[in-house]
Image 1: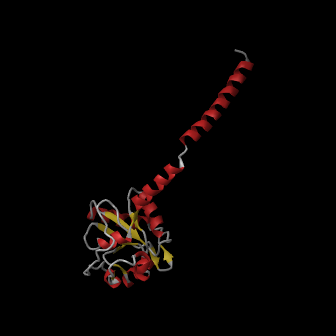
Image 2: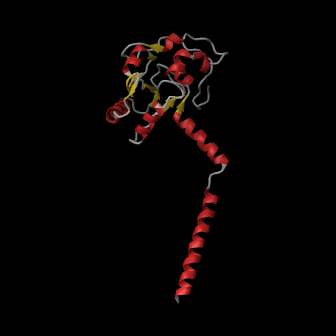
Image 3: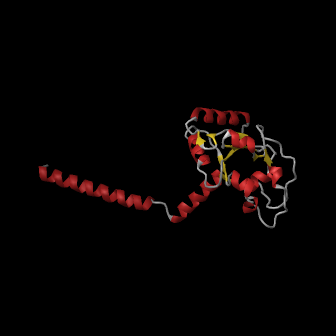
Length: 200
């Protein structure tokens, strides 16, 4: 083979490779339906309905973790929640305390085998739960995320509870102090959460 043939073969090979890559990318690109399915799979894998937490509060089937500062937790928190602060003070994050946070979650896993660990922070748009969740996932610790935060639970009860539900006393679902507290109220039968994952 002379030099011309080699150059032609290299060019043909390169062009074929480019076209092959473009065609395979287009054939393997996810469809809109695939993306929608993936979105809902992720949402259902990560997010926990506040109704599910409320309906099962105190039954020991999950561990609820408050990520706000210790000071804020002691002022008031969702009853039954334990504190693993991702904030040193109400105004200063403590995201750098990776070892402390990760070891706290490892202890929770060891003490509660088979139970979902559900985190919450300040509000629905708060990124603390997502940041801590990612940091933990990077260390093979997997947590779920409450679909609302403390602000919605405490101050906007009617935002996520339906008008047709039997009214309950929101104060029954809040504790103060350094301990998680124990639920002693009576929950409503509205918005049932079934074993198949359907509910509010």
